[in-house]
Image (cartoon, rainbow, N blue to C red; front, side):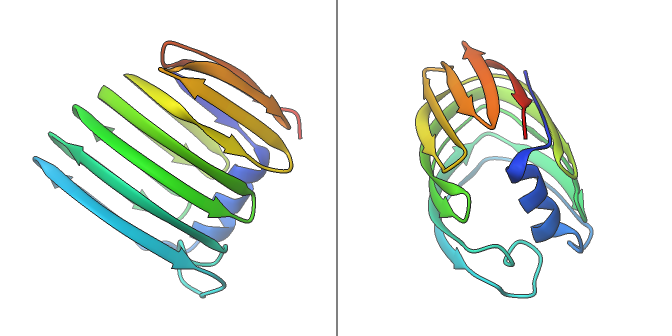
Length: 155
């Protein structure tokens, strides 16, 4: 379980998605890869400069989003992602048996059974994880143990 309140990432999410149109989806087995690069486009998800690559595959997923609110559920899945943005850079690989998540502006909650391995570095924090266990140090302090996580924003 992961709960994050506030912090720079939450503020960037609000700026990037405040006018995101309503969208809902549900799909069975999926797989895909992609790259992206966006900067200063006046479109939801493209305002804040970022570039990255992602590869993912899973058994099923469903979700909905509108503005700064979103919710989703995933069945068994695996993914790898690398991204650089105005807040920092990182790469992470994730494998999950399943998860549910919700975001409301700068607040996010995720409950699931899975493990992450990767690193994120920014001017305000460093996050290191190996098989779901690790630390977050900086403006956001946290500890992860076997895929369960507790974080607190000190910004």
